[in-house]
Length: 196
Image (cartoon, rainbow, N blue to C red; front, side):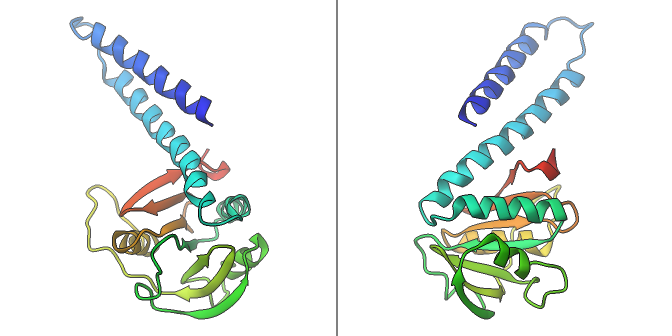
């Protein structure tokens, strides 16, 4: 993934340099080229987010590969999900606790919790190390308005919690299947097969 990231950045850099060199040519319109470069930036951001997500998760759960697999499956099925990974900050004072689970983190259990119609699927799951601590948790919503983006409740909750703590929150959109994660009050898209 690092190699893909490096190649993508190099390609964008080359295209930007070319765009600068033809800027004085009034018969050449850069708008189409800039649109293509913008799309490549968005793709590179997704690749970078996917790479760094695993780095961020690996330090706080040994089950990061299983968690990535689970999120991929939820995305493929368009099952909405909100998964909070506790890092250094203890999150008990930031969330409204739902139902105690106290079980080992497994993709099958997470997929069952977020199965549509399950009474626990609307809230957030709290993961601490390799354990699912609780489900159906309520998170604080962000008050921040992001111009040009309409955010659903899951995304606003993820941002709200990450503005107040160092938690990492994974979000799967029920409408689109797109996956993103929130960290430090910012959202980052992740590449999945549903987003390709």
